[in-house]
Length: 305
Image (cartoon, rainbow, N blue to C red; front, side, top):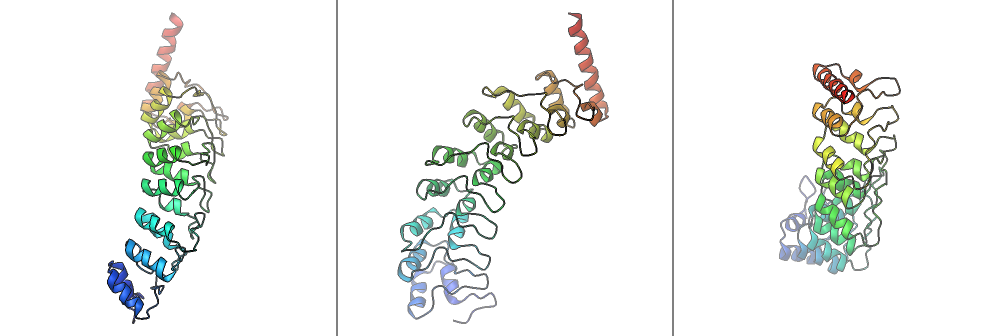
């Protein structure tokens, strides 16, 4: 079989097109089934009958890797091919499905399957994959799910962790918890606070709490959600991070958030950071000046009562 310039033989073309009878004929006429192209691929990833045939009849290894160190198993997971995955697990014929195997990017099979809830559920329930397994950068699968805002996958994981523990306080190498990773996804944040009892004052490794992340991003809807449903946790509006900044200091560029923090959360605009700077000193603008005037007027009215 003469390959083309990409290293693809007629066997690769037949496998890529799902031509099972052609694949069988070519292999039976003494063509090696594990021949790879220039990318190290064998080409049958999307076709369950061909995959089953290669595993059962020719003892092909599901952990065989391409030239970049990505195993066939990971291709299947990233494409969300549950039927192919089940076939592989049921017919591995003595090979081991290494659910902890990391490719060159440090990702396990669970990391690759992140956007496919049916595959994730199967990997956790049937293959005993651990939701806290980390990539080479120390980022667990759980954090991938949160950062993508995949609420259905998250719910599936929490309901089907199969003895594994969802460590809501676990910090990755960037010091972020699952709540920090979910910051831009209000439905996920709400679920983590209400159902998983995550604490909005939990800090990253630099001492920055989740509520400060929300303020920096100006995410008013997330902030309102947190204040309404803090579920017994206390939003410490005076909490200072390692720079001495309160939630109001961090929200200074977002006038709607500033207004909410002052009016609804009773934050003090005269609170200072460790350098003695008030939130107003962070941003000299007409909008902030107007906020200060309104705050002063409100305090004056209170004193007159």
